[in-house]
Amino acid sequence: MPGVLVYVEQVDGEIAAVTRELLGKGKELAAALGGPLSAVVVGSGVGAVAEKAAAYGADTVYTVDDPRLSPYTTDGHVAAAKVAVAAAQPALILAGASFQMRDFGAALAADLDAGLVVDAIDLKAEGGAVTAVRPSHGGNVINTYAFAAGRPVVALVRKQSFPEAQPGAAAGSVQALALDGAEIRTTVNSVAPKTGAVNLTDAAIIVTGGRGLGDKDNYYKLIPPLAEALGGAYGASRAIVDAGWVPYEHQVGQTGKTVSPRLYVACGVSGAIQHLAGMRTSRNIVAINKDPEAPIFRVATFGLVGDVNEVLPLLTQELKSRLSR
Amino acid sequence: MHIVVCMKQVPRDNSVKINPDLSINADGIEKIINLFDEYAIEEGIIWNEKHGGKLTVLSMGTDEWVEQMRRALAMGATDSLLLKDPAFATLDTIAAAKVVAAAIRKLGDVDLILTGRNSTDDESGAFAPALARVLGWPQLTYVGKVIDVNPGSKTITAERHLETVVETVTAPLPAVVSVIKDINNPRYPSLLKIKKVAKVEPPVWTAADLGVSGLTPTVTVTQRVPPPPRPSGETIDGPDAAAKVKKLVDKLLENQII
Image (cartoon, rainbow over all chains, first blue to last red; front, side):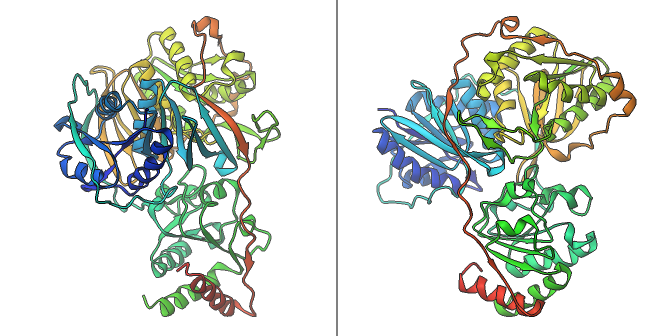
């Protein structure tokens, strides 16, 4: 029976956390489908990562190891994945939902004429058929998808949707596949880390400021220190990004980043529906705003009515002394 | 050169309802150009001004969309094209890409396709890659800066702005490019230009015109529900700001949130 194939994302020679989640969920889905769990590691010099993937429960780990596969190109990685798809003949192909994986996964699905779901938060396999759940419309609509029979499904999964697999004793086999006949049309001239990069989507705690802060100086005086006291990252509403206070990189919401941290602290943010779209799935939300009618309070776990310019310095001080940072 | 911008109309916000047949009901919400597509239109105008030729705004939609297409014309697009057919109403992303690809092939002389990184309603970001693969063209997604479009060497060089890195990539033309928000500052069309295009009716191509038929969706929606409500929150009260702050920190520590 066809099983599940996981595309292994690598971060500095390690398996990305989202891939460990997919190996765990993939094992369960493969069992439900009655097929094997396989994984594919694509890149240059990927032997060590493949060994690690095998320890996380994949029955077979395919490698497509070729100098042309690093750095990432759509042409190269889609061609490599298709070699693994031909070998594994999976019913379901899983990858993460980062920008690079969306570039890859949608292209792969188009090539395979497969079903595609982007940003899945849940997956099921029943009676040989896969269904997927994904939010759309800024989280205001939760969709369940079914897929046409007889074709594979490509599911790009939002991180932190499933528990991570734990490494086990029984390691699967590693099988090398060759990248043949791939034409890579794009040339990657450079890959540079973003200067002052804020990976908001990875942060466990996010402190966001909005127009209620009054001006740019207040934002920088109050928000980064509070984020630092909490050991978190800092974000911004669209209003203050568009006003030029804070770079776009920090924007949370419909046209910025979608985040789901353990703690989201919204300071002087009114909570327009476009903002809620980007943060409503946060596990805990603290809202601080002087307007008790602000919509942000409707999603808040803890709501504090007050002037951010008065409250935030006190809060930062209180946290510093009690968390001894 | 001929640049095509693929544009989608979306509701200004996502306070949509779900119809009994599971379609999305955005009645009563103002319709706008998908924000990311507005950046694609501006980027198209910038390169059209530099290299001349045509800048076509292309949409797959209904007559309702024409107003937003006119806005793109008022901004500076030179041509428009509406793909309209009852058969297009329920297509999934890959099937939609097949229809648009058929139109691009029919146009015949397209060098570059620009579009937004995703629509703000469906939010998948799958359209640009799917279109590129169906056409067999290279793709550059999440572009935050176009460094050069060179009609002589038939190449485009651009920065892809990913979560933690910036890639600088060169692709041969024709190519498909999706853009992010901070790539440029979209211009406001002048009243004069808005008046000038107010009566423009975009040419319409149907499924028959494009020779597409038998498009079967690979994805069907079997359930659509609103999200589960968040558990109701707690108001942090106190005689003054200091007392409220202390109580808030107590709560965060008690619940092991920090």
